[in-house]
Image (tube, rainbow, N blue to C red; front, side):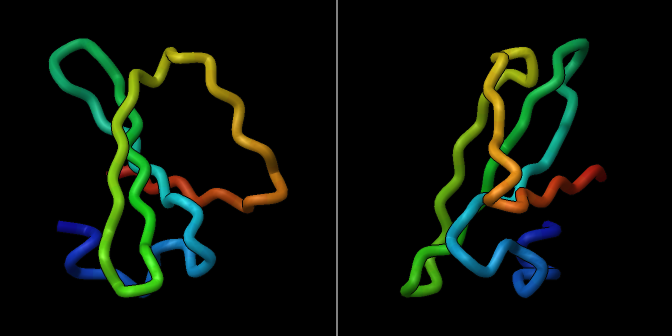
Length: 64
């Protein structure tokens, strides 16, 4: 719903905007990015995966 309501708030340079969410007792992160043609790409992973995001991308995190 956030992506539909606020598409202009997604990262403008094709980097993902991250959404933290919980399902039962587990946390997940969904990354949503925009393609040049306006399409969206989505990936989901466990919050505990240990991935490190570099600061040069200036990632955005949304907590709902």
